[in-house]
Amino acid sequence: MGNLYYNKTAQWIAYAAFFAALAIIPMRIDDDFLLNQLATYGVYGLLALSISLCWGFGGILNLGQGIAFGLGAYGMAMTMQMQSQTVENPIPPIMLNNGLDYLPYLWWPFQNTASGLIFALGIPTLFCAVFGRIMFKARVSGAFFAIMTLAMLSAFYTIILDQQAYTGGVNGITPPSPLRLGSFEIDPYSSVGYWVVFFALLIATVVAKLITQSSFGLVTQAIRDDAERVRFLGYSVSGYETVIYSISGFIAAIAGCLWVMLVQYVSPAQLDVGFSISMVIWAAIGGRMSLIGSIIGAFVIQGGQSYLGDAFLSTWLLFLGGFFILVVRFLPNGLASLVEAGLGLIAIKSKTATSHEPNGAKPFPAE
Amino acid sequence: MAGLLEIHHLCKSFDTIKVIDDFSLEVVEGTLCCLVGPNGAGKTTTMDLITGRIKPTSGKLVFAGEDITGQDEHVIARAGIGRKFQVPAVLRDLTVRQNLTVAFSRQTNPFFNLLRFNVPGLKDKLDEIATLAGLTHRLDERAGILSHGETQWLEIGMVLMQSPRLMLMDEPIAGMTEGEIEKTARIFKELRKSTTLIVVEHDMGFVREIADVVTVMHMGSLLAQGTIQQIESDPRVRDVYLGEQEAA
Image (tube, rainbow over the protein chains, first blue to last red):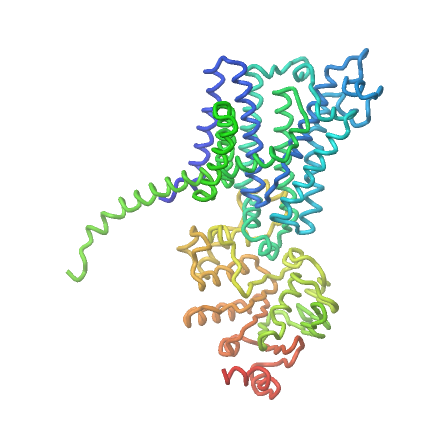
């Protein structure tokens, strides 16, 4: 018997157990505020998952995941804002306050909820596909690609901040009422909001896991290992990189939409460089080569931030920094590698235990 | 018979240095061509040019009747040219099995591969190649922990998994033991029946054993071409290459 960590069945059982545990939470908790907070952790989990897919499995370090997250979040905020505009009052206040007395073209697709959601998810994915295509075709990789994403993120941040009449500037957009789908209203401060995020995380994780187990997933891991070599096997490296980067962006866009659904608010802070870097830190601490490890990394760090951060104030950042250094130094593949090593030890033990008897029973030929 | 690979007046300069200077070669289908020459003669550069790793300054490359000059690496690989590198290049973080699976690149479309979990025909081919390469008992090991000889075998196995029409082997026996070299020679002679090979090699004993045609390169140009007997009796070749080997 080999290491259970690599056993596919065991992996799926671990995933099932993890999601079962998450499903029990809303049944045991009555506090709506707490449920809402836990649901936002689910959103962070989605972001960590998207980073793990792109960086852990595709080898593409992306410091600008805030682009897809932010664009998705703005799309959702615009959709929700338009839902609360009426025939008598068709223009959102952010425009009126900035001297615009008409609805700009940019906002037109968001007048309808369905098309608004399609744009909220489609635009970030399209951006990733086009930007990724240009970069990967030119064989920009590693640290250089990371720097490009960072530059792109800053550009988006500046544009959104600057175009106050269209985006609400630094104040962002604050839709007055929760998201309505048809006649159904998703109350973010209830178990419904939690379940929406739960199922999004569940589906995204299962799909991501299947991707890593497909032929596609194997090729991306080969590219992570040695992109140059994979070209000579007949695979278009840039094509594979573009696809995995776009899928990762799509998941981040879903996270952006859900985040606004939960907090009814978006601002340029969601495209802040620091936030995008924290996504990478979650995946690094949890274990970027493990989807579930990355999700747990996000839970642990953000949970720690919420609870220990309040108690220790800025000292928390020192703790976080120290913890990060320890993980990078001693567990380069994150907390998930602890599990890998633990299960490896068990595998070796059980192997020696079973192989001991025939060895011991066999007498030495010389004797 | 027309050449499977035709190289016409190939030139490559880096800045002002001409590395490949008006090099022409025709490789006939079903033969094993050995490319020899002193260090710096441009053998590996020629391999790089054929496989698209670097683009020629001028000249033309025709493979199976199609112009492949200046194409990207993956396009040329798909056309049917497989390559083993001088410094063995395997995917060190993946297992031996995964290395061979990735190399079985019949389907290269990313969207199609997203929905594919079982590759038809893979198992039989993988078993066959693993047995041939003597790696059956190491299939689930990480490729990074293999010995140098095993790594060479794995990379040869990867090229075989691709089932290319033309195989380029850059110094395939470097670091192998006598027994392994004999086995390699046996397999190459077997492969010659179904595919075409270009082998870059310094070991003249090995070349004598396997080559149908020997091509000698010197200073980026073709110096001589012929059977091993013709090459070994050619005074120019003795001068620039073989003589040097005997002295060493």
